[in-house]
Image (cartoon, rainbow, N blue to C red; front, side):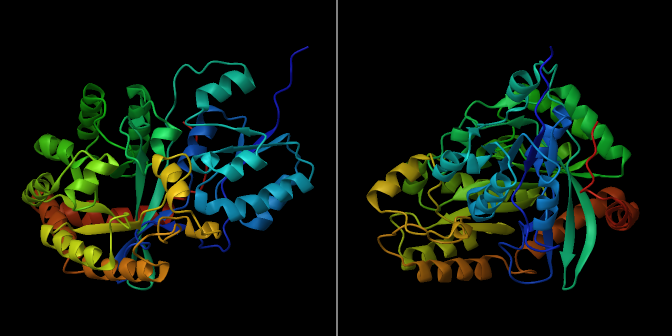
Length: 443
């Protein structure tokens, strides 16, 4: 007799209110006007649902929605989450056990935590569509299909107004680099390419539904140069404007080619303006590269988002304030500031846990915004002060990111003329009103 597949529900952490979605921009920009980059869907769950349609998923449900769903009866309830979601996930695990769920799974970066090892009957590491398909459903996937994943970009004046919907794209998943603070080398240490056929399918879908802007979510774009070149040709073929995350030196080397094929925005890790610290944490860059990179992006009218970290062992209040001035003088358009946070299973986690101790028990503060370990020179209150001062100093609407947006707009007007008003203002706004990105769509 053929074995019946288990009924599986996989969910994110629940949200506390209707608008309780993480805003990646709002976490770093206190002043308005600004954009709001809302995480209303889960990329990992969309990939699972696309490739394993038997699985039921819930993306940031309300508590009552989750409890109601549990009542339908499940053999397995799984959770994909981050460390700062643990408080909510532990509540959800308790409720699932209470309703008779026999097996609990954990995955995502939160699955690397000690708490997950305690509550989960099974932990899935990395990107697991193929492994889960073989082990649970007894079939081999021909290829990974890239699902449509769309998120809203709004404008906050206030009030918050819809602006456009942006398509998300993975060309590869995982990272070959070994930055000591990053969980990706533990979560998915062997990067793999998404099939070009799958990439073109989702690009065609985005274009068909009126989306003209993409955010490439690769940890480091161009890890596989020959594959990435073919992806770049597809992006040019479908005439997308696209944003990307990559290393500054890689972007600098290929900036002309990437810009000619639609790149408009690049995010990259500065992490520190101290060359010794950069070497210590495994970053393959230095200040000279950063300055050359900034000049090149300004010349090509590319918007720059610098990812910067404070709270290294060597840092003091005075040194962080001095470093802000160096960063300011380089002149990137926008800055994402985070506080050094030792995440489970990273080299920093093992080192800091033993050497300094991790004191913070409030999981919500394990989000790279708070000091959670015993820093030798800076108190938690001082770190909050430094974080707020840095965001206020480096992210001023018209002096910093406003000027970068103006450069991008000028470039598009030069390229499109009056067509810019329709392509980049009116049509995206109308599309954002009509398109519901929370609806699950399979290709």
